[in-house]
Length: 248
Ligand code: SF4
Ligand code: F3S
Ligand code: FES
Image (cartoon, rainbow, N blue to C red):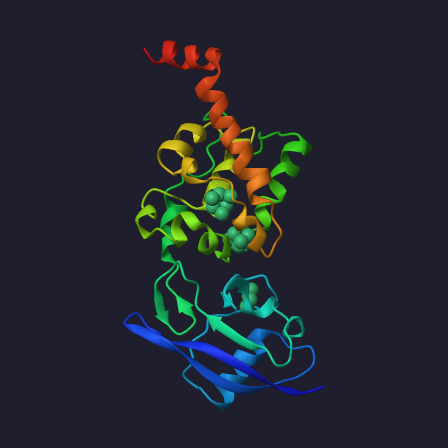
């Protein structure tokens, strides 16, 4: 079954741009990325879009469809009415390079700010031992495809450019939580999460979890437990005493 859909696609660059209207063929089983590719093939050969796997696994094709952050390759045309106008815009939180392609280097900067896995110095590779339950706890976080839809959605940076400096965003606060939960990691993740990576900015609105294409429970399983661990450290009198006595 074939029909003509009404698409409205943002075209422009860092200097500015506008929404442009297109009428384009849709075939059964297609996703929004198919339609963008058809537009490139038939009406707008210079339309810029980033994609790679077309299977929801590379995290490249993130954009906004009717204002909702989505993977273009995983958004079926069948979820829209045939007479609906479908608006495709670039992710709002990151600077536009051209058309649907944004500069996501903010995320790589944040990734680099987090110290990597830090096992105890005396342990040699091959001597690492951990329980299955600890392996399973972080498994969910490792499904992340780095699409940055959660980073794009979180209001802390979506509406406040000025917070970008202090706030790592849900994806990287989740990375810190993953490391904090690792039984062999000895780095101080709790203090750093709060003081350097802006965990306190998160007011658990859960919008990040809602848009995650991997259905990772970012807020419930990473951010809230991380907040609890930070609170335990700060307000547990024994931990406080220990930290302050041994610092001297
Ligand atoms: Fe994308 Fe989910 Fe990873 Fe965020 S946590 S970058 S939404 S896969
Ligand atoms: Fe932002 Fe997610 Fe927290 S949307 S405020 S990081 S729960
Ligand atoms: Fe790879 Fe969409 S093209 S996730």
